[in-house]
Image (tube, rainbow, N blue to C red):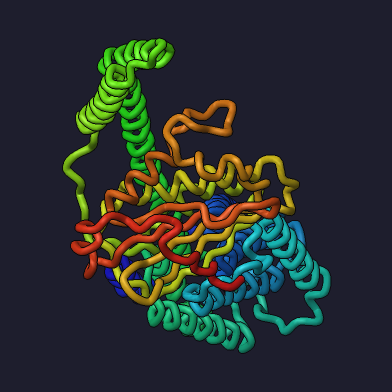
Length: 522
């Protein structure tokens, strides 16, 4: 795009000052298109900010909002656009000053974006609340645009004259165009130095596309309604609109991926429910016979004990048979469970922090909808673990959703979720999740990991059981470390990759085998 723009600029330069047809409708049409494009782009950027609230996103969205508003304001002041002297201003210099303000606000916004885009916001920073930050920013931009437009249109005599007449610039105009080109170039240079994303790339194209407008105004006296003036204005609008098309294309691609992921998730969930039903039916069918035998043997044993004299040997034989039937029931359950176990496991080197961040992105909508304030404290030098990424993601996502459900009864200002990672300093990495819900009742704390036990009216009682099974299959432990009226804390301990083989060779340590590590401060 830059090469094409440069080639067209070079080809047009010799004819830039040649007068062309005086088309008064050109400015209203072109500026209206530019206004609509910039406002839509600003809307998309604000929506991205609502998903990931960083100051850089707010800055560049404000820049496009400024650009769209000033493009519209300049149309109202441009001579012969809607009326001979323009609807606002003095009919000569107001439009030029609005152009200067327009192309000052946008590069300043790009500079702010480039200088702040690599900074992560501090926890609790008010800028992280999109519902307050976006309306406040829009209101501030509207107020600033209205105030500046009023000043340059109501008091043009107080400002240096940029045009002597419709065909001649003053020395102030040349100075203004030098200033605009330098500011634009500075924004382009800083953005190039700190470039990282596709957005950065197309912002650089947009900044470069305005260069000919400034350079032509510096070196040529006749600027309006010349060949160069028409062509360079059109190229700038076309180049700036490419960012909108890029954003739309990315949104379409992300929507397609999301739709595909949701479809796969629904199929997987349906498959899991079918597996649960099949496993339950198989266990019920196979275990009915030993259970019936246990009941019959127990009744017979009691009858032998009731005899006078007591027939101890026959009673002992009945009870021995009961033990055998119970052992056979356990073998049946283990066998049926193995039929429905997912194999093979796709394990790779996994960074626990990355899995947690991905889960928070997946759960972001539910967290925002529920009004839950989230804080994280990740230890960035965690050693990797050897795990199935999908299963580990499923475990953490299930714990997050349980926490969301637990806090539904809390007032909005008291819903807090905290995630943290750490290390025991030896052979395991730790993950903590703490909510501010009502806690787990003392009598239920040992049973919450049992299959089919649930405290929810609509729950199946399988979530925590499956989570613990997955963690134990990875050689780790999942346990409830703290619970009370202020909330509950769950801990996951997983062996680091170097000790994975040893961890899988030994049974996982029980909750009583080691002390509870403290949750990281904060």
